[in-house]
Image 1 (cartoon, rainbow, N blue to C red):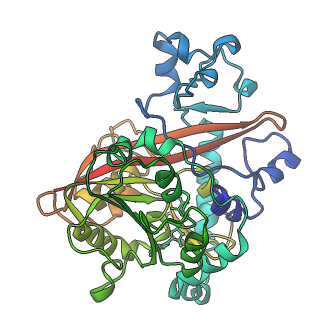
Image 2 (image 1 turned 90 degrees about the vertical axis):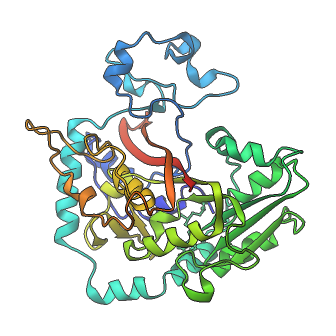
Length: 401
Ligand SMILES: C[S@@+](CC[C@H](N)C(=O)[O-])C[C@H]1O[C@@H](n2cnc3c(N)ncnc32)[C@H](O)[C@@H]1O
């Protein structure tokens, strides 16, 4: 699967406040934007202002002669934008908060989206058999499937550990593996003769794509059809039993589930992962451009949309996600995903979205604890068209109790 394909597919004709010219505004919707850009490791919530105030070390400098993008090896998260910078000097900046124009635009878009939700007929059409729409997606998107996600090992060091030659028997389960964009790069770097990668997806077409790939090596890899929100006999994928998985990977799959499936999916992952095992997670954050640019007829429910190709996508608040997995909001005082504005009384203007999410577990009975969860904010710049595109992803790890 092309990294950016779901977002590109999600792009109905959209307008944006960040473009001065109408023509440019129309074109922003058709720009392919990568979902899979890796997160920055340090201080994801750092604001441009804070960065400006800090003593910026040379390797973080945006002096063209000594820019972070030219470090070898390249390190993410070091392209800080300060007031002195020309925003259009580079293609991307890290840790950038949305500007007021974008916030205003986002609010208007949310209102527009809510005012014209998906019809009941279409809701049942898209919700009754979501795998059908993903099958169509994989039939229609055969090019650029396998981009090597070099950032995986950088962002999730546990993946390097289980691939070491002497790591011993280790099992990785990739859930919603798609065409294998994560599983194959891990396999390619593996030096552990006892590593097994189970790559599961509920799209049979996606699983066929993985199985037909030249790199599909059954000694180390098994691709299967499995619904992550399956129940009863289908609650576990083929070949895996309770507490058999060392590392579970969920990259842009949790957002494809309906909120009504979250609890079952978390319970299924909990059953599979060994005590002390890790869940590596990356997905969309609220306020991401992909959300904001949805127009009429795409809104299923709050933060949940149907793309033009019939696939569904949810945009998470950080607190909401942490609560779903661990029963606890990490820090209710500091919602940082999306566009929550602090009021004079210390509350947040639209924190109600995060609070609405049901807590499935108490902190005590939740199967996972939080290792870390960061908000990965990027400002992607189209220099030729003078467009600013704000992206927002959530990335982190949960630990099985
Ligand atoms: C946006 S794609 C991401 C694919 C892959 N993780 C990647 O990053 O390239 C979402 C994937 O989740 C799969 N998916 C959606 N709902 C699922 C479910 N209930 N169980 C298993 N896979 C699911 C889709 O078929 C699709 O392959």
